Length: 566
Ligand code: PEP
Ligand code: MG
Picture: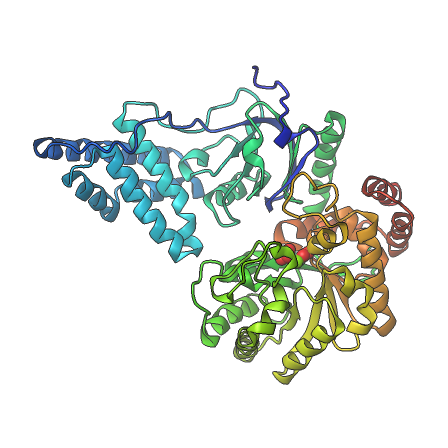
């Protein structure tokens, strides 16, 4: 098989759009390369070493760990900037006393070096994972060191990224700094990983290299080396063997848009001055601070549940207030919308007491958790109120997964009792249909198009196979957005969009035409969305919206918008 042979398999069929988390904007179309895997070596040999063999095995291990660290340090010396820093940090980790000691102890107890390395790394991986956050992301570095040391112990070449002979897209389960540091951006033109988060080393290096990057891409493991893919770092997608002409057009479009977007500095408005706030979606204070570097005018969605994914017990009001205050301070004097915990479904929280459910996406998630566990919501609202007072920035608060006006009424009353401005998310079709009644109770609405598409189309948003159904351009979804925006306009209350639809510059213009008053997207998308909006008039947005509302397929909807907005 040559490097560019198009391949197909049932799980990675042509045209499949895999969804991930966008990290660095830009679009690239090229064949996939994958890092070399460590060949199978016996990692779990149960045979113990004889007492007299153990000291030599300990020395053999120390020599291997030291050789790996030296090579990493040499590469650090030849790299620059962040790449150099992360290589040096990995070299230091390879010589960390705690894990060297844990491995030596296992060897002293009789384990051969490879088994000892695997056991000691597993022990630290467990510990780091439990600590969560940044520590959890160092797990990749540890596993990388483990594989390098095992290769060294077996006299095998170090695992790593092959140097391609033409521009390629590096896809991997995860990438360690030693894989990515020093990559040539002319040859590796985009990155995509199955795991990883926006603050993983993959993300840090991709930002430094300035190449499009998408992480946490479900289904990416089924895309083999050699397959052509289109990586869209703004929308967070990887399209498998797309139509070639369309893919090349998408790359050219992105290059043109990037050249224009680079000059946009906000605030969000159409070319004729119709203001539409362009906001950022964040998951913690670090993300808020980095969003502050973009022209984002505020935060349209703070996904608070993502702060606590690795937390075993409910954080105290004070602990919550600390986190929320940091986010509010990052956007001092700006609009910040904090969403209460959207726990459940694909984001279970250990302390939320989720019941066992056959269909968790249709189960007790979001606001529904408050029914059996009212303390959780009360404590969170108290934490938010305390953070507001401390930071001097009054946030808006909104509840996820609202399905009825009564839920909205209860939430609003509770938020108001603490002096907070209440709103709700519209992500269940029932809520869009009754937006007028819901607006009798709350001060604003925010449309979550990710879930709205999932529930309108009865298609799991996590399923790559159903990605065409969960496309936010689906006319049925756009109709519900239109209905919600009309309800807001009728009573003069703001209606924003905070789902991924707002990250698509073309769709963002259509949403504006439908009457949406703010657009909140991943920070990486802010620049492109604001720049596109600045190129079109409100009349054009309205014309595009009307044209889209007459279509009956997502493809026709896109084409109709393109015909008006270019
Ligand atoms: C949405 O559903 O569109 C949304 C913004 O919420 P989340 O993606 O966190 O479910
Ligand atoms: Mg949602």
